[in-house]
Image (cartoon, rainbow, N blue to C red; front, side, top):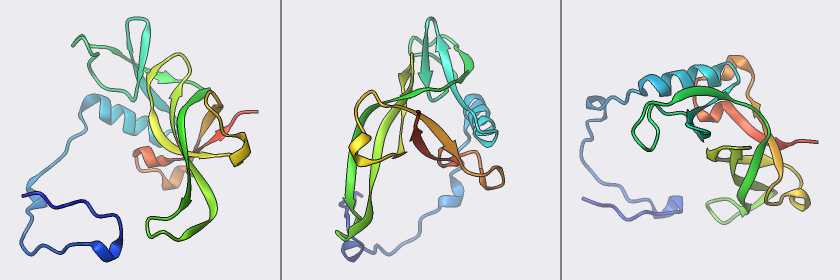
Length: 152
């Protein structure tokens, strides 16, 4: 059964029934575990496939060969972005937020995350770096990166 996607809290549909979520267990695998450990340490990993690095890290390359997991260094590059002026309920935000597709320089792939810079400064090709949450707050998730900030 499919439920239509809704975007406002007041449009939420309540469906009675039981979902047996405890039956399903997601395991991150070898690459996912290494990535989680790296995020806790304040690092990001990718996978080297020949002369290219793909982000985020996974165990196998697109050609099904096993790649080498490597640490990704700064700078990251803004590939695409959007500026958000309203929250999901249509209320004006106090300060606009920037969400961007960022990728490490000289790599393929990337992640979508917040970029913290002035609206006037955001542009394609902007060089940024990740800012991690304090160590004691990290859990091995991509949200351990609090945001990306512009490099000087």
